[in-house]
Amino acid sequence: MPESQKSDSPKGKGGAVELVICTLGVYACYLKYGLLQERISSDLYSLDDGQGSQRFQHVLFMLMLQCLSSMLIGFIGICLILHTDMRMFTILSFLTCVCLVVCIAAVVLLTEQ
Image (cartoon, rainbow, N blue to C red):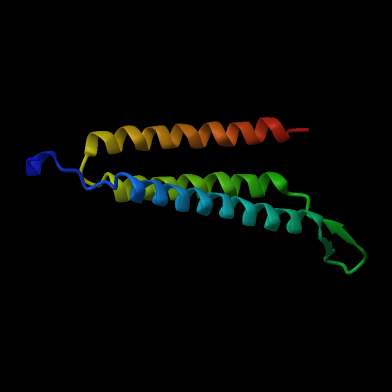
């Protein structure tokens, strides 16, 4: 096979193992995030005046932080992978911004009371 047709991407068993590891990592992160979110929203916090306590009330703020951090991590991934292909970089950057706007709109519309 000529050098120009060789690919640096993993194939076969190595690629499958990498896929399984990455998938397990994603699910582990979602599980950890869910446990932390549950703890934040179910614990009682004392009020500033020291009179009583209440639960965390700003779930929309947490969801907005989740959307922003997901967008930032996705954008960093795009920058690391596509640092030489400017056309594809521009397209994927635009799509990342569109996904962020849609995610934030969904959070706002679904949690509005």
